[in-house]
Image 1 (cartoon, one colour):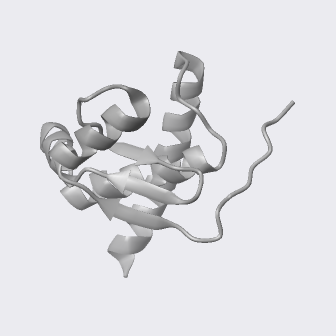
Image 2: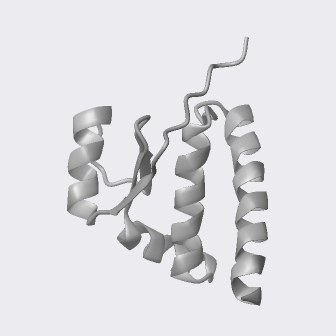
Length: 110
């Protein structure tokens, strides 16, 4: 049976330092390492731009595109998608890549 989705009425995007992201990750997930994005059901999406910069440089893409990817990833979690299994992770990656490329094309056309 599909999970009921209660998408929040408002979204809050918060940029955190690596230290702050590590603290939040430790508090809620018992893992003190900084992570790229954390989303909460009430609509807050935490993003670490320092991790985004590192990943963007490794993949030779603009940092802003990587940050946008993290925002999309967080919103997909709020839509009920999960990435805990390999199958779910691949499904989520396909969706977020499709959305990212569509948005990125529109942003660059403006």
